[in-house]
Image 1 (cartoon, rainbow, N blue to C red):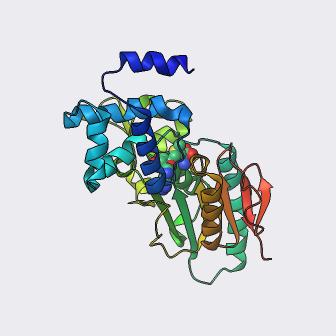
Image 2 (image 1 turned 90 degrees about the vertical axis):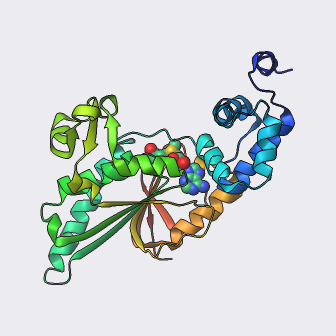
Length: 291
Ligand SMILES: C[S@@+](CC[C@H](N)C(=O)[O-])C[C@H]1O[C@@H](n2cnc3c(N)ncnc32)[C@H](O)[C@@H]1O
């Protein structure tokens, strides 16, 4: 018997049954690919309880009935409530070191050889970008390492399923504690301290913001994106999917990459042998090769 679950049952504000959990977890999986194991029963309760409060419901049965009626707006709120948006500036810093020390010098050497041709085009996708720290860290790294960046045509696409987090990302305003550990030089150069109503915050400067385009996109659906990309960051996202969904996703990403392009994944993820075109070239860094 699960004692924690039993205790929680007796102290809950809203009636919540195993049937409610099964219904909600099936809906999340169908809509987002996120696979919620039984261990996530209490997490789901905690996150969805806020929705019940704001809608004035008293039981999860009522909430599940409401979703069952196909209320798209509430479905969006529900999925937004379930997603885990943990992220950080320069999270898994070895990826940004790889950009600075290996990839960008390689690209700059190529560009020097091809001097006289068109602007060097660079397309990067941050898939599952959460509140924007990842794409902004990529933009800062490019800005700091490419001296003649104005002669490059650079676009970073940043997408996430959670529409509310994409809005936050687009605003680019962060509480000071989120940027406290960044090197002072980065902070001074790429952030503006909030004044008046924004005291206690730092916002990403316009020069960096202009490099990133944010969009809401569910990776489980069609991707209205042309590509190809020179690099894709999909870090700490596929970990939430089941094995077949991960494999499908990895193959879809592979098709969006040029030969020679890079695919960055999260620290606890692997490509599970899903696609032979990817060669491991660094810690959780893969390169697409010509087979
Ligand atoms: C833990 S965050 C990772 C953020 C960032 N990539 C990083 O590594 O710091 C996972 C993100 O994936 C997003 N996500 C989950 N399922 C998704 C899906 N089906 N389509 C698009 N984004 C999804 C979540 O909304 C969340 O913001």
